[in-house]
Length: 407
Ligand SMILES: Nc1ncnc2c1ncn2[C@@H]1O[C@H](COP(=O)(O)OP(=O)(O)OP(=O)(O)O)[C@@H](O)[C@H]1O
Ligand SMILES: [Mg+2]
Image (tube, rainbow, N blue to C red; front, side, top):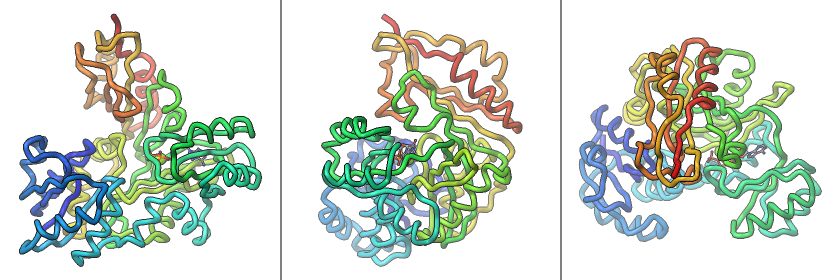
């Protein structure tokens, strides 16, 4: 099977899928804006061929360029697991004539107002919301919906330009800060815990499900640098408080008619136990959640997804054996470079056998900007069959491991 794979080297997770496709016997034709000579050797190794495009923005030019490059090659699938180029991937499917989501089917995965319209029509609980192009429209929407509210971009990522407004004054503040955003969504603020519901699908059938629990909510993590964000891939999806989200997620997949590959949905569980839809991407989750799935099942969901797309099945054993915490660290101190780690040895002595990954910014290297690099100054995996033990490790790693940048 020949795969046209968009953006094989970026973001970081994409490269593991190139390995996955090669592993299940596909020939992978990569397309990206990185020069061939600058491709990660790991990516290069798994590609049959690669074509550099000038940029992603001019979609008409990319399509023309790729038709020229693909002349005489047969392509079976166009695969894209990176959010910003999903619509381009759909346009390519339409113009090459291969199965998979077309443009109309892809829009509800990109446009947060559209997605909620489709799902509300299907009878699912979504936050009340409105698309706004001006402060006047936003003020009117706020009147209608009531406080507290969320103000966020219609096509957003990484909680950027996202604000909570508790009253008219904080709404004005949020509108001022989002002036540069072309379209905003003003929506009802949903109280409660926030989770993911992620799937691997083939031909609309769900072959694998994951629920990760964000601790705390991504917006809180974005606004508070001192927090070490955690997500916990849960072992037991039958637990009552999790099951409501799984049921909601299955209905969302059906309502949107997703077909092949990975999905990443976010949902809230209100204090009353109701599951409320947040958003969905027709792509792999970021934030090392695919790694969490892998460590939870002792499996390779990068290859599993490739197998689902190419062969309509996943042959690996996907029994969930562990709860799996991913913890991100952010350096503290006033220095530019990481100078030491505090607390690491004690944690490794105590929990080391449950910590398969400890990957921190190396000592002597520049600290990273957590608003731009999702893992910040490092990521740690801690897993355990028992949820309570996993949460204890996650909390201790968050509180007791300190990446220091001094001097
Ligand atoms: N209606 C809402 N009620 C409560 N919190 C919300 C709401 N909408 C967004 N948030 C908070 O803001 C965060 C970012 O919003 P959202 O997930 O829609 O945007 P995003 O930037 O696309 O995220 P991602 O990084 O997952 O792509 C959410 O994870 C959640 O913590
Ligand atoms: Mg989100």
